[in-house]
Length: 195
View 1: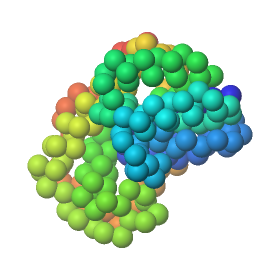
View 2: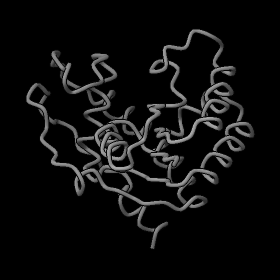
View 3: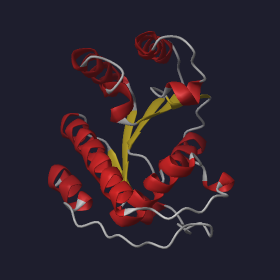
View 4: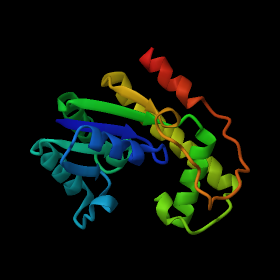
């Protein structure tokens, strides 16, 4: 069985990923399949994408997480589209993940980018988030959700909301939320596609 989780950053996707891996007893863990940083890759970026795709094709009983941005920023669009089409058409289960509280998601992304502390279990730095950092991360996140939604339109799958499937407890060491997201409602954008 091959499972692919499609998600944006800071959406609870790694917790959902771990639950899916356990639920389906998947042996091979690609983690963020198109992120060279999480794969300890030292070669060229283009060869990394093709290598990961080839390994995925030849690996049974696996789980992969895809942030569409990871492949689209590292491969020409036509190559990325071809790879994603093949993977999402041939896998056994596609799961999409989003986060209802976009303000919290943006704050979490801005803090992780600023401190380079991406896991909640290694968070030790508390930094305030500037309005510029919040707005920049918000724009980035909307763009990534638009990529996710385009895939959802073409490749149907189970859609999970972090707040509905995880026992979310905000970590203690985080800055006060001082900026509020006022852009498009992500949940409404997703529900428009799956209705």
